[in-house]
Image (tube, rainbow, N blue to C red; front, side, top):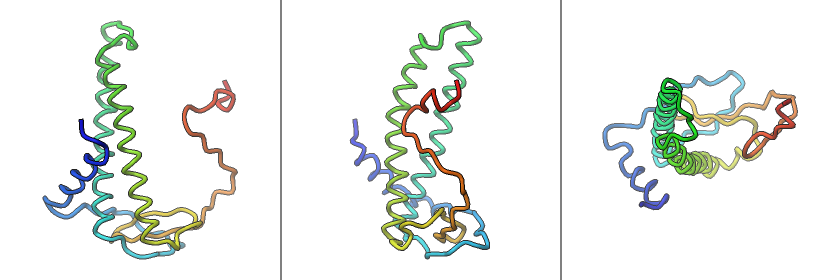
Amino acid sequence: MKTLYREIIERLEEIGKNGPVKEPDGVLDADAHVAGVISDDTKKIYGLREEIYEEAKGLKARGIRLFTDCEKRKKDPHESPELLALAKETLVFELKKEAVDKLFWNSVRWEFPELTGKGVIGIYAGWKVAWTEDKDDEPRIVVFGPFPSFLRGH
């Protein structure tokens, strides 16, 4: 089994070999503050991040198919070896997804240290990095892990 480091490095080396990384198509808001354009290295990390998000969609679709199959056959999904294997695969996949996502955003912040403490940061068409003020006046609750039942209202 490859290490996470090796997996990411090998995949990054492949990014861009079949053409340029597809750039984001987001349009800047009128109140956006452009910090600059990301480097080619960070574009590659963005490309890998996008690939991984596509893979996540595939895992989700596979899970839905397996779960639906269990329902059709009136089988308990908790006893499905395929679903259990997928659950384990998904847990490992999430580690990779989180690592690449953090690598991408940390790379953006590394290139643009002036973004520290800024509101909402985004990547837009032309590979522009921009930030906008956080317009959300509501207090935020950030929960890592399962959402506590006492906050769900159940």
